[in-house]
Image: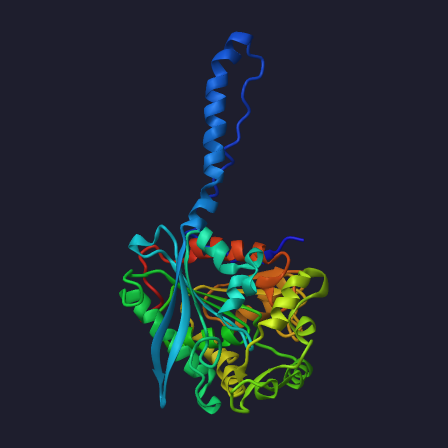
Length: 374
């Protein structure tokens, strides 16, 4: 089933172009066909070459691993990220900054190593550069004392990387068009960052997110965690991860996930600081915070998301829009993939969401490269 979306139309929206398909005359004689064949062959060859362009663009993408110093309050740390640049990046291609959810790291956006489910691959093929970060305390980023790691710290760290991307200090390119994309706990950090630093970005995408979380589901999530140190990880007890074999039920819809994804998810699970959650909920789900966002927002959920869609109606983009628009001061676009669970991008049909996100960003990112109001 296709993902569904709704967006309030804007007066500046360009008119839709009509299809370029036209019917040719079909009662030509043999002489006309003789003259037409070379033209037809050339036309087919041209079309086939055009169809191959996205794959060619993707093959020219180059990726680099970065370790960037960041600081917030008493915390000085290193944030690791994978920067993938397209062949069009000479002038600074539009950049998507990707922030994963709890117990995930930057590999979430790479399909957990399964190319068919890679958000970054499809975004790069659509002409976007991507910067997938490891939140502090995850992946190859620093693992400081867990009590020092909060959602606000993550927001500050992401802001510092975006500043470097915009000024050319990250890779030598001035990325004037930046979008912030979050998943779950990463969406809450994205809300905090977008509200706190309004000049950073031109758009926000929130996935696995809504303002109302069921108390029962919150309890289920918390009881599904335990200290990562119990699995032999050299981390203090404040770092938690999921108990064995619970991720399939928490994060995926059984009939919309590849078994290979479930296996990879369990094998590559990460840990997160337990102290990220309190201010993520208090600030990242606060109407005061989300009302401070000054740029377009896309909220995208799986219709069977047990975290974001238990207390909110996600049966359609219209119902999600009705529930969530009051929490934002800017027009909200909503997207629902009916069969998918919490990890929308990893679903069997997750590529449909990824492609929609790229089209939406192409539509809403300001042509002059400005972010929100400074």
